[in-house]
Length: 269
Image 1 (cartoon, rainbow, N blue to C red):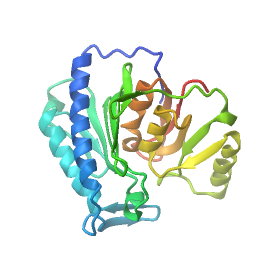
Image 2 (cartoon, rainbow, N blue to C red; image 1 turned 30 degrees about the vertical axis):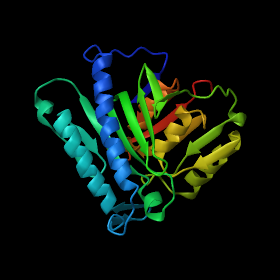
Image 3 (tube, rainbow, N blue to C red; image 1 turned 135 degrees about the vertical axis):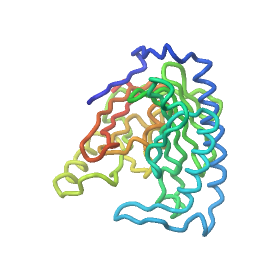
């Protein structure tokens, strides 16, 4: 199913006023900042590998960060949580309402970057109603910057409002992209992937989908595009792009239960 979300489309959240959204946003900001600041203190114990796949790695820091976030969100909101490491977590409100509100959490987006000391990784937390983004937070671990956004309202970097760029031509734009773990690595697919680069002025593969989306939201890049990306990788960043005036199109793919193709732009391309 394809879904297109634009800053020009009025999405009805009748059940949730702006005061409620701000309260939920503050929950996410508080725990993302706390966990992110803890992750700044890299040490041998936090880098211990729990699982290693061909193109990915899971470390102790992932698990500790997730436990802390889940504990905090469960206590303060009682909403269901979808998290990268633990999957679906049902909380008290799950059986008490017809709402499909849930948190979508990636405790450490860019785990491999983190293990190598590459300064592109973040804590990502989003609040969604089924497949409709409501708000999101991304904490840039190495820089200490906090990105936040409420769909239909605004987005911020720390306390300063941010907006997407006004670039209107692809050949003047910067594309942020990546090669997700669940992607097809055939020669044909990779050739098609690389040929796409010719359209743009520059291409950046940051190794963190959440921070790539923040680059679009803040005007540092114009486009984020990725195939078969896991929803928790983009769950915090998509609302930030939308709050900053950008457009996002995403639709579910068949690779796994939680994979999507995502295109986020400044809305002028």
